Image 1 (tube, rainbow, N blue to C red):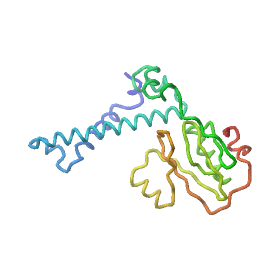
Image 2 (image 1 turned 90 degrees about the vertical axis):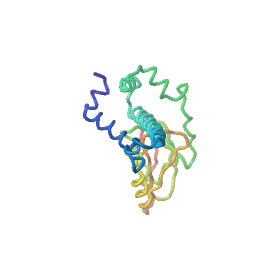
Image 3 (image 1 turned 30 degrees about the horizontal axis):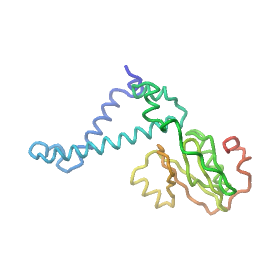
Image 4 (image 1 turned 180 degrees about the vertical axis):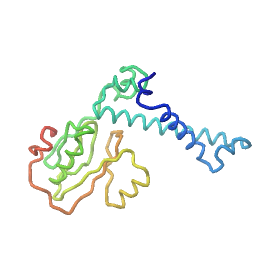
Length: 211
């Protein structure tokens, strides 16, 4: 039994495969019925399957980025994929092991690091109370900028189009990273309360995560 099979039951794996197949077949109203007498319907299935493959490939890469940000090793990721640690890192790691350099700090900008899935939202909440809001982020860090008002931040796991529209209606602004394929979507919203006084670097909640 594979490591993946240990984490997903046979029923869960079967349901996932069926859901993907049904999504592809439902791309046209005729669905699978058109395959019996319409040759072009088969080409539609090819196009739909290609898009499904591209999307699942994107989700796989984002899932791996999320696992790595949560502290999982390349060995653990490789086991899930049924390949070696080296193969997983070569295929899904940053080419040459290099990542985009972390932005430099200025008087109005700070870098919060090292951040991961389990401490970043607490750090962003503390920074937001002091008027800092995220303007960019990358692997294990967030770049924040000072302002006179408090901010709140949200993290959503692959939000649907409906959820994204709802966030926009509620005044949340999507934070678009300059060069990072994140498994999460980060949002920020400015509050009316004035920023609390304090030194971001010495704040007890974020101490040790500011470069």
